[in-house]
Length: 485
Image 1 (cartoon, one colour):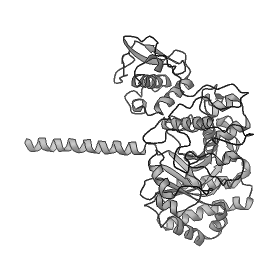
Image 2 (cartoon, rainbow, N blue to C red; image 1 turned 60 degrees about the horizontal axis):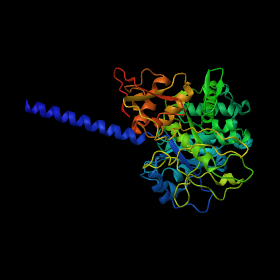
Image 3 (cartoon, rainbow, N blue to C red; image 1 turned 135 degrees about the vertical axis):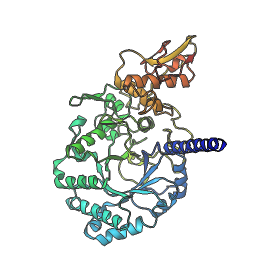
Image 4 (cartoon, rainbow, N blue to C red; image 1 turned 90 degrees about the vertical axis):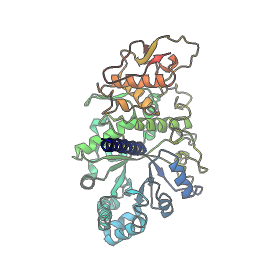
């Protein structure tokens, strides 16, 4: 009996150990969807080794290079950071016409570093289809195929994917998102690309920039829509979906275009997106406030795992633009002001990327608009600080008010779950996942923030969408934290 008891105890300990390591792995990979672009058009960047240490201090799990700088690839060895490397547009003719050139490219830029350096994707060219260079466009697919052939020959074909990166201009139509369709002028080239993506499991990589959408339509309501801030939304009558932010609308337009081409199994990767924090005096939109609001709220949205309306429940891999400013870039001032970090490795502004701090230092609130424009309300559910307010003496729970719309409640969920609170009970498989409604999930999330923040009435406001209740909303199997305030 003692031996049997000992065996049982050891088995229990082993299961607990395995469960702990499974949890650790899940936590370590839970933000693998956050990446960053590492451009090098600058003469003041820190050494690659310093950048590698910086990245390890953040929740950034992937880095996209526009080239294949060996010093950077080496510096990222054994860090676990996923690396996207790029073959330049100028490499495409050689890659397309000569399989040996493609083999030499892999031999020089991949083979010496992999697997210590975790190269996960090779992008062949950047925004080639919308470049207007018909020669380059016609050579794109052969170049991609030759790179894939060289990976296969090196037994790396199933480990490293190959694709190219597109601008949003590949779409002929994008509004409403359900009508998203590719420009028919790309014809067979797009069909061949999508066939390659589908056959190899490589992603369709895009560069959506709500910033440019606002720049072409600089109304306050457009700015709020672009910055994930409260707004009236945009209704898609075909799907009966009201979109509450431009990012989801742009990504879903690509999803619709892919589906219409029969590429429903091809995943989307956001290769670039960002917002400049300063620009020239005649530029509309750049400011620290707007950049912090866009990037901070985007990160919170990704962390919420809400997904997009057409791709719910998962976050698209998204590479923020950019890690550093590139001070040698030509063009308007905004082109040199996208960096999340300065060359001295300090933050340009805080969007909650540090591992020691997963929420911004201050809420991303009012967007910065020209002085003639009215201010726009914050995306952060406002809770007015009023310590003198009377506190209920009995147990209370923070719940949604009657009549609040689902989009506003979803914004509350995104805020809570995107700022470090444990929303696992309302995720699939969690004790409070059912009923699977926005109303029910919002009730849990809003109460979670209220109770965790100390149960003060001013923490139950959520832009006037919440109220305190003495009725315990807990139900069989699902416990809502609650207590006396």
